[in-house]
Image (cartoon, rainbow, N blue to C red):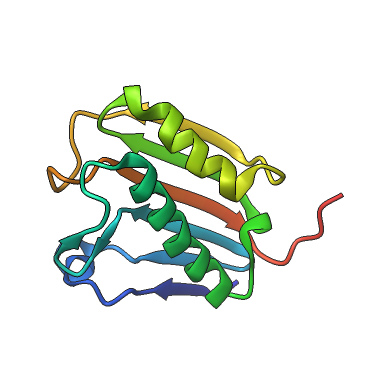
Length: 131
């Protein structure tokens, strides 16, 4: 199987040594994704808005690789305040109400920027038929 490293062009990829996503065969792993665009944080103080923004970013990566949200089998959600779980969960539900991937949400001390409230990573299996 071939390995494809997918880059977003962010300067952090080379500084830290990671890829935005890695695809091997039909397995797609998407790195932790935040509500940031270049040096701007989207949805400051709004966990719901950040989650929606993140999931839309993830959707674009999957679609660029020939898949869709239905191909996501796992989401991992890292939050800086677990008390926001309902807002984050509401946004997650908007994208995954029918898909229902395996999901984990955990509180972390902080993310790489103090205005980031949510970080999400996903695992997808592209172009697989599900019953």
